[in-house]
Image (cartoon, rainbow over all chains, first blue to last red; front, side, top):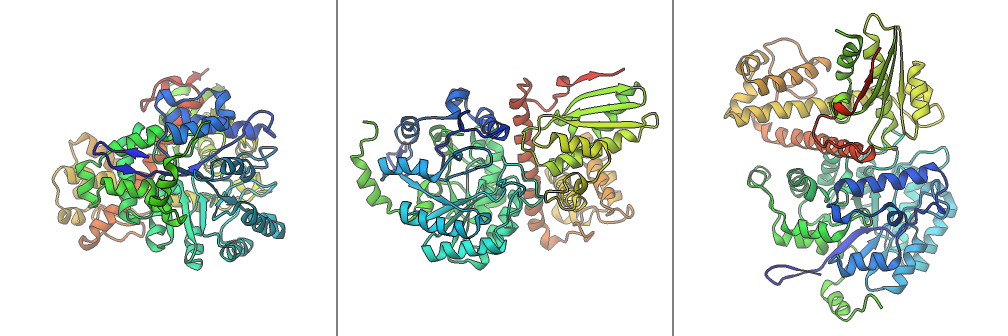
Amino acid sequence: MYITKDGEEIFVIDGHVHYWDASPENQLNVHGEEFINCFHDYQKNLSPKEYIWPREKFLKYDKETIVEDLFVSGYVDMAIFQPTYLTDFYKNGFNTVERDAELVREYPNRFIVNGAFDPRDGERGLENLEYQVETYGIKGVKLYTAEWRGDSKGYKLTDPMCYRYLEKCRELGIKNIHVHKGPTITPLNKDAFDVGDVDEVASVFKDLNFIVEHVGLPRLEDFCWIATQESNVYGGLAVALPFVHARPRYFAEIISELLFWLDENRIFFGSDYAIWHPKWLIEKFIEFELPEDIKQETGVDLTMDVKKKILGENIARLYDIDIEAQKEKLRNDVLIS
Amino acid sequence: MLPIQEVMEKLNGVMDPELDQSLVELGFIDDVKIEGPEVNVRFRLPTYWCSPNFAYLMASDIREKVSELDWVNNVTVELKDHSFSREISQGVSNQETFQEAFSKLSGGDLEQLRRTFKIKAFYSRQEKVIRHLLSKGMTEQRLVSLTVAELEEILTGDMKGAMLKDRYLLILTELGLYKDKRQPAFIDEDGKAVEIGAFRDHLLKIRRTRLSMEFNAFYCRNLLLTRYNLQDAGSDQNESLEVKGV
C-alpha cells in the first residue's frame, strides 16, 4: 500500500515479478550465463545506485528477499508471477510455475502465479495446461514467442498449433494471455519483435485479454497502433517504467503516447522484479508529472486517479481482485515470521 | 588523409538501421586494423542477444562501405561477444547472404527489413525537421505547402536546421522519393504530400516513430556502456575506440 501525502491509500498490484534461479548450478550453457548477465546489465543500467545488487545475489535470491522487497519495503500489496522457462539455457528452468507456486502456498493472499505454454510442445503441452489449471488454478499464462527450442528460434501466436492452445485456454477459463514482446532474447526471426500476431489473435479471441508486456518495446509505435484497433489488448509497463528515473522526458513521451492510444484503463504497472525494485519505481512514478507541453500536444494527463488505475485497479479487473475485500484480508497479514 | 581516417570516415556512414545512428557515434566500432590493402573491422553490440539480422545488416554495410576505398582489396568483419559471432563474422567476410549464413534457421528477407527501417528513419528525420520549423514559428499551413527548394532556402544560415534538413533529404533520396526541388518537402512513404487536414495525425504518427527509435537508442547506448564498463555516458564514446592503424 502506498499512502499519498494527502493520506490516500493506493492499492498496488505488481503485474510482473520473477523468482528465478540463474545460479551456476542451474545454468545449462553459456547462453544461461549470458542471459542473466544481460538482465543484470539492465538493472545496473537504469536503477538508482543503492538498488544495484551484487552479481551473486542477482543470480539467485531467497524467499525472504522477494517478500521483503515487494511487500515490506516496496509498497506492493499483491504480485503476479510471470514464469519464464528458458529450458534451453537452464537445467530446471529459469523462473518456473513450480518454483513460484511454493511462494503462493506460503502467501496465498499476496501472490498469484500464472502458467506458461509453448505450442511447440504439441499435444503433451495441451495436457500440461490442464494440469496447471488443476494444480495451480492459473488464470493467466505468460508466453515467450521468441524462446529458443532446439533449432527453432521462436513461434508466432498465429501458428495453427497456437490457436489450439488459445482455444484450450478459453475452455479452461484462462483469460489473461501475457505476451512478452520486448527486448532481451535473441530474435533471430525478423518477426520476433513484431506485434502483428497479437493483432490477429486478439480479433479472433475477443473474450481473451492480451497483455503485451514491455508495451511492445522496441516497437512501441506498432504496439500503439494495434492497441487502438483491439479493445482487448493491454500494455504492461515493465522495462518502460525505469525511465521515469533515468530519462523522465522520454518516460513522459512514452506514457503520454500510451494514454493517448490505449486510454488509462489498459495500462498496468510491473516492476519485472528482481531486475528493478518496486520501491523506487513506485515512489518516482507517484511523484512524476507530465510536462505542460506534452499535456497540451497529446491532450492527456497523468493525474493521481490515473496513477491509481495503472498501479492496481486496471489489472485487478482482469484477475477478479476485489480491492476493498483484499485490503481487509491483508490488514492483519504477518509477512516475515 | 591517412588510411585509418579514410576507413573511419566510411564507418561513420554505416548506420544501425534500428536506431538510425552511426556505428561510430554509438560506440559499436571496437577496433580497426589495416595491413596494406587488407582491413579488419571488429565491432560489438550492447548485448549478447542483439538481433542477428540487424547485426548482419550492419556487418555487411561495414564490408561494403570500407570496400569502396580504392586501395582496399579485402575487408573482414568480426562481431565480438555475440550469440552468433561466428556465423555473422564468417558469413559477412565470405560475402554470403543472411539466408546462406543462417540456412538452418528462419531468416527471411533482410532487404525488406532494411526498407522497413529506412522508412521509420525517414519519418523520424522528417519529424525533427518539422518540429524545428514549428519551434521557429512556422504555421502548419505553410509547412504543408513548402517545397524542397523553399525548405533549403529557409534553413540557409540556420546551422541546426540545415543539418536536420540534410539528413532528411539524404534519406529521401536513398528511398527514391526525391524527384526535383519543386516537389513538396513533406511527403509520406508513398511520395504523397501531407495535407493540412491530416497534418496533426501525421505529426502524431511520426512522433511515435521518432520516439521508439530514440528510446531504443538510449537503451542500446547505455547497455553498451554497462556491458563494457565504459565511463562516458555522453553521446561521444569515440575515445573508447582503440584505433591501431598502420
